[in-house]
Length: 268
Image (cartoon, rainbow, N blue to C red):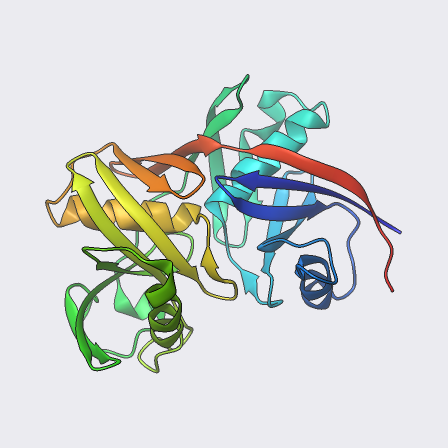
């Protein structure tokens, strides 16, 4: 049997395990299945000393980093009795992430995700341009204006006057797998409410429409500030909560994390 814990950050839910498995990709698919498994957007395979996190999406693909997942890991470590000084930074495939401003009752923390990278070559985008900002692309007979940035993961942002999940699923899937994005992309649908507030729906690579995406919130806030539509800090409204993004020399993400359950999973 495999010991697990389950946490969520603004509805973005994760299964956390410390017992390493030979095939984490296959395990993620089984554990994250919402009918025959525990059910989650992703699997976090972690070690506490040193603090290291790997994340696998529900389809088994591995992501370099996850903002909501990092906060869930921090909350998990605190629930396990670790001191705040022991979790001041976390190793991920996207590099070392700094943890700051841990609060309790209710729990929240801030993660410094580093500098955004706008180079098209860093994101495996098939373009002759050095960046992918305000680029036009026909999808489903619609001419879309897209901007992409790497903040722990590749994100492509487009503004929408009316965010409706039903129409986003198909469009998100088409953009995610469009040939121009050679390594696929996460897709962020953004509605600007005022200069300090946006609403966000994310189609996450390897997951689909998700309740929240931390790196997506950071990418969306960064693009909105870059475009002059918002001023930092930016509140990102999600179906199950709110994240705060500080856009400066680096990108800082603040938000909650909540423990849902713990138990043992028996493979069938």
